[in-house]
Amino acid sequence: MAPANPVPFESTPNSASIPSAGIQAGDAPPAVVSSDAPQPVSQEELNSWRRGFTPQAEIWNGRLAMVGLSVGLTVLLLARLAATHSS
Image 1 (cartoon, rainbow, N blue to C red):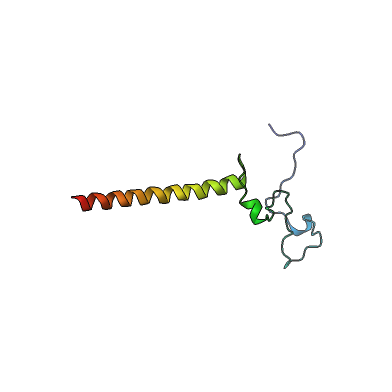
Image 2 (tube, rainbow, N blue to C red; image 1 turned 135 degrees about the vertical axis):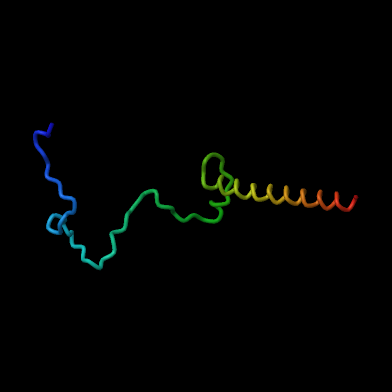
């Protein structure tokens, strides 16, 4: 069954139906202003010890994970070297 008031549909709009708003062909698109855009912070703020789901906590999480990975690989390397020299 067809709708009572059909709306005409164009698959490709023509230039007469799109308002130009003063934008020329070579102009860059308008910048999107967002309140979620990252803001620069000081070095002390970035390195502060904050708990919870904060960017500072994620930075420290990554640092401590790399320290743990380095220590674990060093222990494995030393254990393998000690096992091969004792045989």
